[in-house]
Amino acid sequence: MPDPTYGARHIAIIMDGNGRWAKRKHLPRALGHKKGVEAVRNIVRVAGKMGIEAMTLYAFSSENWNRPDEEISDLMGLLRQYIQSDIEEFVENGIRLKVIGNYKALDDDIVGMIDNAIERTAANDKMTLAVALNYGAQDELLRATQEIAAAVKNGRLDPEEIETGHISAALDTADLPPLDLLIRTSGELRLSNFLLWQAAYSELYFTDVLWPDFDQKELEKALKSFGDRERRFGGR
Ligand code: IPE
Ligand code: IPE
Ligand code: MG
Image (cartoon, rainbow, N blue to C red; front, side, top):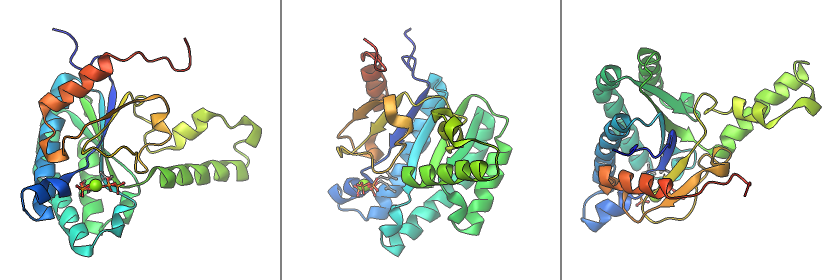
C-alpha cells in the first residue's frame, strides 16, 4: 500500500463553510458549527491513523471576534464541549494537544481546560493536534518580534545576528515540522491571516467542499494532489 500521507508530515486546514452548510439546509448557523465539530473529530481520527505527524486546525481567528456575540458564545460553548468530550480519546490514542494563538485571552474556564488537556497529553507522540484559537498570523509575528526585540534589548542577541531561524523559533509553531500542505474548504481563495510565515513553501489545496462535509475521502484527495506535485523550493 502506498504511504497514505505521501510524505506530508504537517498539514493545516482552514475549516471554512459551516455557515453556508447550515444555510443550504435552512438550519441555524449554530448547527453548522456543531456539524463542523463532528468533522473535526472524524478528521483527527483519520489523520492519526494515516500517520500524519502534525495537523493544525484553524478554529477561531483573531478576527472572528467581529462576529455577533451570540455566534461567538455558540462557538465557545462548542469548544468547551469538544475539549471535555474528546480529551480521553486524545490520551488513549497518543494525540498531543497544542494550541497556537493567544488563547490565554479566552474565558478563564476555557484556558483552564486547555492547559489541563495540554498537560495530560504532553508526553503523547503519535500525532500533534495544534488547534488555532484566537490566532492571527500577524499577531503571532508581532509577538515573536516583541520577544526578539526584548532579547536584543537585554543584550542576549545582536541585531546583525538575527536569522530567519530566530523568527521561526519565536513562533507558536516552533516545535512542529515544516508545513507541507495547507488546505482551505468552501471555495474561498485566501489565507485569512493563517500561518503566513509557515506557508512560505507549503503546497496549497483549495476545495469547494464545505467543512462539515470534509471527510476521509476528501482528505485522501488532498493528499493525493499533494503527492502529485513537484516541490522545488526555488531550485530547478
Ligand atoms: C468556519 O465557518 C468556522 C469559523 C470561522 C469559526 P464559517 O462560520 O466561516 O462559515 P461561512 O464561511 O460563513 O460559510
Ligand atoms: C477563517 O475563516 C477562520 C477560520 C476558519 C477559523 P473566516 O470565515 O473567518 O474567513 P474570512 O472572513 O472569510 O476571510
Ligand atoms: Mg467563513
